[in-house]
Length: 423
Image 1 (tube, rainbow, N blue to C red):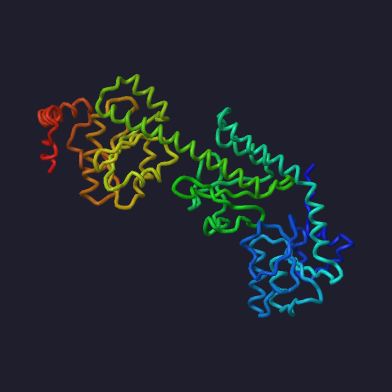
Image 2: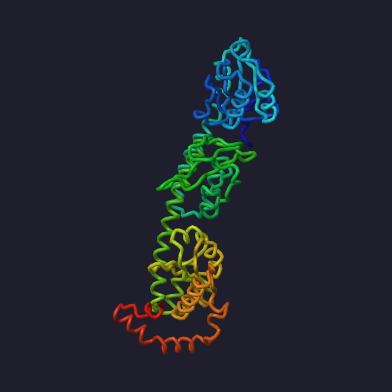
């Protein structure tokens, strides 16, 4: 059975407190985590969310516009309710203030002069103490996720499913732009993302926290309370964000290892030094199976490519100002969106075959892309190569006949005769 959480309505039911609702009755179901006195006009930098803010009135501005802004600021920070002491320093409450409370469902309560604020705080503290052990237990179990990462090698979806069960939240991860951060974890609605990593963590229904990484924040973790669950609070969500950062570092390290291995394999394939069986085995390990193409990309930095190809299996090798890409034909959809790019694609081939012919096709196609100003040209899709024979054996013999001596001289002497011919 789900644990009952303290609500603003519960506080109204405590006879000793004698609270009265001035406005915002539709928000009486809001959860309460603490009660605290604040006479600051803007206490939000020091709030975590779900607090009852109590004031004798010094914090409440007198001007109508500032009163409304005060209430909206508290509501945006996730405050559960505003409690005003009667007959002390509360200025006259303007219609706009009360109207904003009604519109937002932000409870505004009146505390009788005979009831000290400490009595309200004690009632809240006693009620929330019951869930303290559950919250601490959840924190300790979330730390156990570090052991799962090291020992059980859980996939990302299973790891975060366990964290959701422990914490009582539904978890989302995304980059600062709202794109997926790690595979297997959904992205939140971009509208809930904070404007900066310095923003308060509380959002309606949960929390939004930065996921830190070397060089700056990698993205955000958004956690919404699950209906019927026992949400364990901000501290647990902060621990989940730490686990997400560690997991992201592991994923990035693994990707970088595979990327280096892929570059080495592609270099050997282009040099034609791998036998087909070894080539196919390596490509399967790098998730390159089925129909493949070779692309040669000019005018794009490596970061441009990596940012767009993150979810696709590929091999990437940099040669001077050219990027060689080997993967499925789906790579073209990502490559053609890069500003200022010129790319040429070979005809599809079976992974493990020699890349000599595919490289020549991609080189001819990228030259055509540069001449025409098109972002991507696929070999054989226009008149560029129609005069050439289609049979690979005949085409290879033609190239060897015309350029064989030049290619052999360049290979033997590390020369640039072929570059001169192109020029």
